[in-house]
Amino acid sequence: MSKNSVKGVTIQGVSCAVPRKQLDNQSFLDRFDEKTIADVAKLTGVLTRHIAEPGQTAGDLCFAATERLLADLQWAPDSVDALIFVSQTPDQRMPATACILHGRLGLSTECQAFDVGLGCSGYVYGTWLAAALISAGLRRVLLLAGDTSSQMLDPDDRGTAMLFGDAGSATAFEYNEHAPLTYFELGTDGTGAQLLTVPAGGYRLCGPASARDNTLHMDGSAVFGFTISTVPPLIKSILQQANLTISDVDTFALHQANKFILQHIEKKLKIPAGALPINIEQFGNTSSASVPLLLCTNTAERITGSPTTLLMAGFGVGLSWGAAVFSDVRLQSTSVFEV
Image (tube, rainbow, N blue to C red):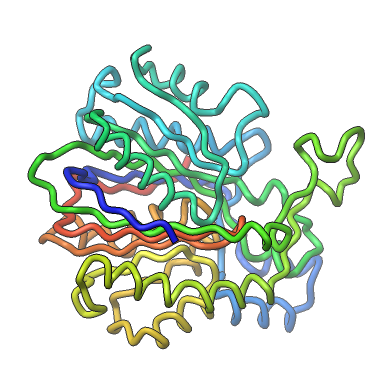
């Protein structure tokens, strides 16, 4: 796995936007019986999720989150040096959604803007990219991460239809010469790429694609096996790199894959009660937005108060994974709202 550290990077704020439309588990009674719904809810932990309206995109959600964040931090649009958009549900095939958002936000023509096509691990990868840009000389970087996974689900697939929700986020990173080292560890196993996939939409399948090719396919048991075999060693390894122990970390912000997986990791690593928050019951698995959404909800009070040691980790589609450790985290602003 790739290991590195970056000095001088701070997180100033995080904002998240979710669609107003909500679906609770009873909404699926027209497709699944009560026992099936109860069994899935027990495994995943999902009780409700926010679902994008037709025409509402990940870019729209991230745009709303960014407008709120810039206002909260009082950052002028022309003070932003780079915009990174992380998603596997971009607004359109071309141009990059980052360029569209750059124009909507009125950012400077000297501001870099580009897309990153990652899902579950995308927020951590985006964080590493933002840190790398700052270490290269930029001062302010916006990371926008979001997905509208509901728009590519098969409503009759019990393994995915009741699991995923939609959300968008914006995170503000800024250079600070006094900030301590931030540690990163990233990895990929592309031999498992077909375990979680939407086959159509690119150029491999030419011509009219079947409806099934445009929906998400997931080998749930294989993805589960990958997660429980990869994430605990990942967390142990990055803690060793940062010269920390489990008890030194105040908050573990992990991708909200499903409740059973998170509880398994918590138990296996003997993470203290309350240090690994779970909000999947409210939002479902929101892919690239799940970690920032967690920072704006269950951990918001903690990371905006006294200095906090934060470990974040993302893992899944790709297969890819990543973890980051920030010490002395004190955000100026967090928010979550409906649009």
